[in-house]
Every structure is written in C-alpha cells, then in structure tokens.
Image 1: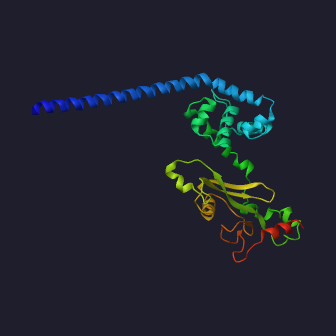
Image 2 (image 1 turned 180 degrees about the vertical axis):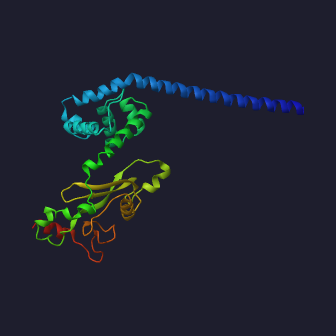
Image 3 (image 1 turned 135 degrees about the vertical axis):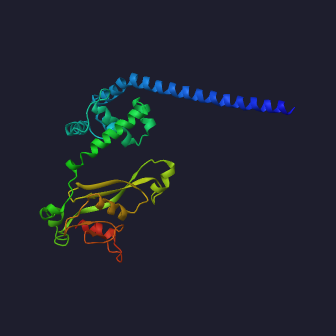
Length: 284
C-alpha cells in the first residue's frame, strides 16, 4: 500500500514537472514568435513610417505640422540641418534624420510612452529607444552654440542690461545684476517604485529643472534630471559642481527658495511684498 502511494506521488511530481516544462517551452516559443513578428513588422513598415513623415512635411498644412511637430516647418528643417551640420546626427540605412527627429518630438511633446510610440511609428521598441537617445544626445551637444554662460574671464566685459541701465528705478542699484534663476517643475512619468521621490508639493510627479536666463530672455544655464522633491538650493550646489560659475562682483535674482548671498539676491524675508502695488508701479 505504501509503495503504491509512493509511486502515485512520484507520478504526480513527474506530471507537474512535465507540465511546467511544457509551459516554459510554450512561453519561449511564443516569445520567439513575437520577436520575429516584431522584426518582420519593423522591416515591412519602416518605409511606410518614413512616408508618414514625408507626407507630413509636404502636406502644406501649417496647422497640422505645428500640431504634430510643436514647431513650424522652417524651424523643424533648421533644427535638422543644425544636427546634421554639427555631425551629431546622420541618416541611417533605415531612417533619415527628419524621421528620427520626428519620433523624438512626438515622444517629448505628447509624453508618449515607448509602447505608444511603437504603435504610432510602427518600429520596434528597441528602435524607438535607440533613436530617441540618439537625438537627445545630439541636441545636448548643441549646448555650447546656444547657452553662453558667464565666466570669470569675461566678467569685466558683461554690459549692464538695457532694462536696468535705461531705468532710473533700477540703475544704479542693480547695475551688477546679470539675470535671474529659478526652478521649473516639468511633469514626467516615472516608474512607480521611484514615484514618491518625484512627487512635488503640488501632488504630481515632476523634474525640478534649474534655469538661469538673462534680461534679454536668453538661457545661460540649464540643469535637468533632479527629482521634484529636491530643494532648489541642493540643485544649485550641484550646478556649481558641474561648472556653473558666477563672475566676481555679479549676481542673479532669485526667489525665497534660495539663501541670500553675494552672488544671489533674494526677497528680504522680514518684509511682506505687495505684488499688486508692484504691478502698478511697473506701469508708471
């Protein structure tokens, strides 16, 4: 009787093992089929997806182009030309630069996931990810051409901004002020396991991006990547470690989220500022 029970138990275990093995084999086969189908789909649709970009650019519909690219056609073409001329982006055997940039702008402008972009452009998720980072790195390499950061070497040559020099209300009190800085909260989608770090005081997930600009509305420095819960002062210290410099004798305007220092002028904490009265004064 005992031997019979033992044999039944062994047969049961073998059946379970066989069943598990069968399921594993089926799962592997399904994965291989899905991979091959994805590769086939990519091969069959790469041409048609580029035709989508070609038709969009030649549509002669400015409104549609701006809705899809978030910029006018001549701006998009100029951006592609800049990326090509800089040597950071070039046509691949499968995808031209315009199509690469189109995919990138679609993801950035619509906050599309990799899966959604895959469905929109009919490329594999690996292809979408590869070209997204390729275009992203190419745009980052244009930083030196468009962001002119003040340095100690040219501190003596920084002119007083016309907005200050031509105003008796500001000059000479702010003659050494060269711009303003602040943190900008940009909504992002992050994995759930790290979402708590990216939650800001407003209740949604964001990146806290440090932005520094001049009175001529030109960017002088941008630092992205920090989670929304990180304090502005911490991000500023990281920016200094990464090369952000303030010329001696010059300073920036900032809000009360920063500490006052020789290089940073913030509102005085013991005074209540009346924004309504300030707005009226600016009209005088």
